[in-house]
Amino acid sequence: MVNERDNLIVMKFGGSCLQNKDSFDQILKILTQYKEKNKLIVITSAINEITDKLIHFYERSCIEDEKCTFIIKEIYDLHKSLLDQLFSQSKTEYSETLKFIQRNIEELKQLGNVVRLIRPSLDIKDLISSYGERLSTFILSNYLKSNKINAVYISSDELILTDDNFSRALPLLEETEVLVKEKLIPIIENSTNEIICAPGYYGSTLDKKITTLGRGGSDLTAAVIAYSLRSKYDCKVIYWKDVKGFLNADPKMAKKTALLRQISYIEAKELAFFGSKILHPLCLDMNEKGNIPSEIRSFKEPESEEFTTITKEIIKDDNVVKAVTSIYKLSMVTVESDTMIPLTGTASKLFSLLGDNNVTTVFISQSSSENNITFGIDYEDSTKVSFLLRNSDLFGKKWFRIKIDNDISLVAVIGAGLLYTPGIAGKVFTTLGDNNINIKAIAQGSSEMNFTAIIDRVDCDKAINVLYDAFINQY
Ligand code: ASP
Ligand code: MG
Image 1: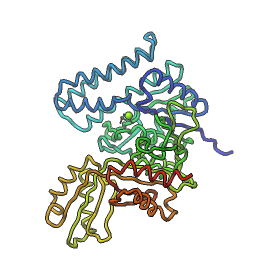
Image 2: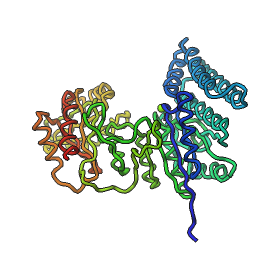
Image 3: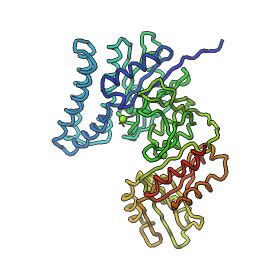
Image 4: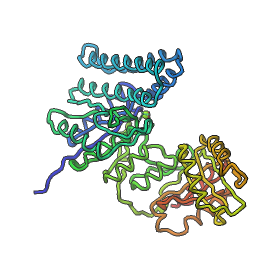
């Protein structure tokens, strides 16, 4: 007999799904519907804006600002008012949750004191930032219990192990897989338990310090949990969002857009990289690595047939280009040399200097004459990069000219079809050229699934729309 494997769905609910009684009831409705046929693990973010407030609290505590007490009070009041909406005071869940909130708020105050009196440090910052998810997840699990669902709460430092790169920690996959299996499988297999609730966003180092996975990191938590359980269950991840899924262009700029119903991980990663900030980009890597299908669905319309499925297979269809996307605010740096300084060595020095200083490059392009390198950086990094280059021994001296243009945007066409269709670059050139949009540089991703043009920011809106019409809206 074939070994029948159970279906397990890891669901991730973001901050916007956790605002008030209506949204908690919506979660309840979704879980009730799915729990009949699937084992469920729920990963939650902090309630809207709480993470910002916690980081603010940490920063204010570092400079001994009076405002700290005020921020903590705000955090308490927000959770307390949610509690009052969700539970009637006579319920045991009410008093249990209230105690949990009070205890955690006390801990936060103490941590604030530690920061003020002894030492501000990145590990305390991560510890403080993790409280939003602890609170929201505990509240949700008790809300489920008060609605007769057997929910189990488990804190994610007991599940996710990471490196010690605080604020942007990376999960240690092998160690996490062992731990998740050891901790979660007995809970999942115990038939009295119905739903497991675990906080997103944080984990712990091997020596038990709390780390966070970067902003928006709860998506990654969900992906890592599914990855760790893939050998035992048929896993899927559903990311509940306030959008239906990936659109083929940014609705803020494009006049027309459509939902992408099915897309491969590789394409979705390109989209996530170029500004479509629906998912934490690393969670796509995780799902791809574990070959775990995932869905992005609308929290408001859970039964809608309109959603995005992301799978490993690349679906070939008539549209060579699946999406037109952009990064609106970008800076472009050109390092130029008149003399024949060998650029191989130069490039490696240049990018080590940037890498060592935490500057990521968005694209790189080099002229064939090989006497200049052009690259794109986040607009926010522009002053830093200017300082780094002008003060470096190599680039700051007479051999190089450094130009930084801060009014740049990037537009890209994306699709697996680019791999096997010639002429895309030509069509991008003519389309932009015919519309009087000047191309300052071009680049192509190593996956060859995007073709990128760098243009003046004033042309960005127009470029998106003309490319959309040329490549997608042909019928
Ligand atoms: N609460 C965290 C943040 O706001 C993590 C998340 O929402 O995924 O970044
Ligand atoms: Mg959030």
